[in-house]
Length: 149
Image (cartoon, rainbow, N blue to C red; front, side, top):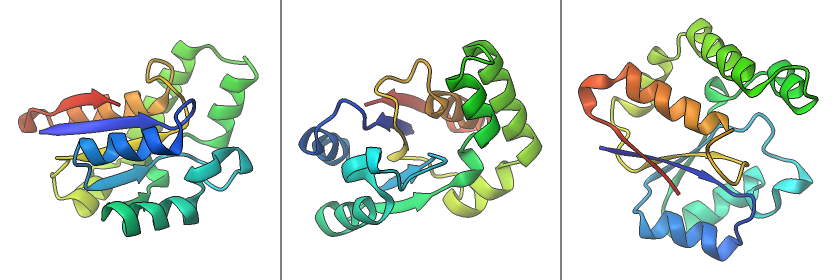
C-alpha cells in the first residue's frame, strides 16, 4: 500500500496536478494548519478543492488532527525550538490527540493512493513526513510504503 506526501512550494500548478494525476491519487489530505493564506496560491482551500474534484476526481479532506498547533509551528519558525524539538512536540501532539480513531473513521485503514499535503517543498523538515511515518508505524500490519512526490 502506498501513502504519498506532497508539498506545493516550488511547484507550478501544472507540475503539482500532474504529479497527483500520474500517481493515481484518490484522496488529498490537507494537513496544513492554515490553508487559506494568500501565499497558498492555487492551493487555497476552496480553489484546491474545486481543481481536485472537477479536474481529477480526487477527494479533498482538510484534516486538522494531523496539523501542528500554532504554538509548535510558530516556535519552530521563530527558531525558539530546533527541528528535533519540533519533531518531538509534534509526535507528542499526535499521541495526545489519539488520532487512530479519527484515521479509522476517515480512511477505514485504506491509505492506498492517499496523499498528505503541506507547503514545504521537501519532506525532510516537514510534518507531512512525520505524519506519514506515524501512520505507517500505527498501522504496521498494512505494510505501508511512503512515497514523497
